[in-house]
Length: 504
Ligand SMILES: Cc1cc2nc3c(=O)[nH]c(=O)nc-3n(C[C@H](O)[C@H](O)[C@H](O)COP(=O)(O)OP(=O)(O)OC[C@H]3O[C@@H](n4cnc5c(N)ncnc54)[C@H](O)[C@@H]3O)c2cc1C
Image: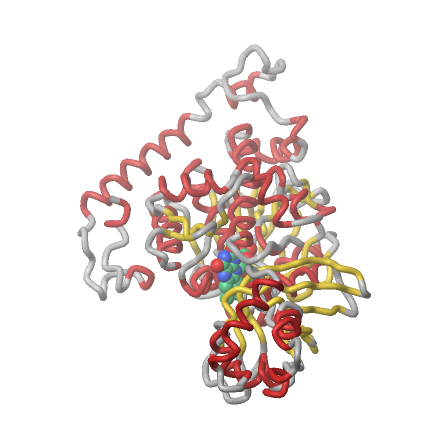
């Protein structure tokens, strides 16, 4: 056996799992398909990285909705937002709240990645790049055989964390789902979650727009087959090509998650104002707009780039000459119909809906129900959340929970190499797990050669090796220059000068 744990993928979930493995002293190795870790992580939140959302585990479960919320119950209870903040703070990356969203204090996605790579370096967890895992098979002698393009490795356990299928250039191309499928797991069809939307409404996609026009806060009402489905608040960004922004993304996620057909959407452009309040405002502003509806629309606070188109959609200047124009305009501005023609393709989506079926995974441990010793974390599973940090939180929390279960297996099976085959059979079932080391009262009667496994003597070389490693790491730190020159610094530290410095 080469190692206790192979982690497939160095994205949000894989890096978190690797960091926890390092802290626990587990012999783990991360294999990454691309030449760099965390490429998608670096794109998150427009490079500011919205890592989580404030609230309790119960709030989060509600926000994910079903079936994701129930599946994540244990992961969120084990690693709620407050715990996530403490974990990152202890790892040298304090966080801050921006409204209810959690970001690194520096609001730099790079710092989230440095936090992980520093942690892996300090705890000696190897991270191998250009190493796509293309086959995982169960080794009849126990554990797994993991095949990459050029090497094959054997590991007692495997954690699959290669992400979804959106933004394939970041490395997430569906390998994890294929690997899981080959091992007998059901894979649910992919759909684009948190994606942009094509619409037929010319006022929302102005041909003249050179930059995105913004509607900072609107409310969308989504219905399907005539039935009200959801009310979604947030911003909308309008470009020549399509609509984006949190309100649009959250709407397309609901459409994908609930597989909705025949959708109708209306937009309330002034959700904080009542129809009567808006009518009063329009009546007050109308005399100042020289009979031009576009001018009135601008005075109401709509982006200049959208004003001509919106005025035309509302009936043009003649709409101002109607007797009840203020009441009519107020009613229309609070329920503008949006004609969605398509959801943007999956490769442009923020998150993938679909993936490894949740029915095949134990939500208490993230272990496969089909292949003992095989674990999952992150977007490779059929999990997704709304905008606001929920997707990264899910990746981090599922990695943490999986590592809890993996840690227990490792502490139960500290055995000399020659006996590992026997132990692996046992570890496939928690109920058969060996008693804790040195627990003489609970230890079953053992043959003499087995007893050495649990006396602490067999454990010593491993403990000594860990102590040696810690000493080496401390010596390394002492001898390391505090600020490597730009050319000496690894690529991820360039521009940062000294990743060690951030460790204090
Ligand atoms: C533009 C953008 C912005 C986003 N912003 C946010 C945000 O602000 N907040 C938020 O919560 N979520 C955000 N998300 C979603 C979030 O990034 C993902 O949900 C999250 O990264 C999923 O983590 P993961 O570890 O499961 O997968 P990933 O982060 O995709 O990592 C998977 C890793 O596995 C590697 N891999 C793939 N196949 C193999 C293989 N065969 N062998 C070895 N390695 C492999 C990949 O190269 C990749 O490095 C954003 C997504 C995008 C695209």
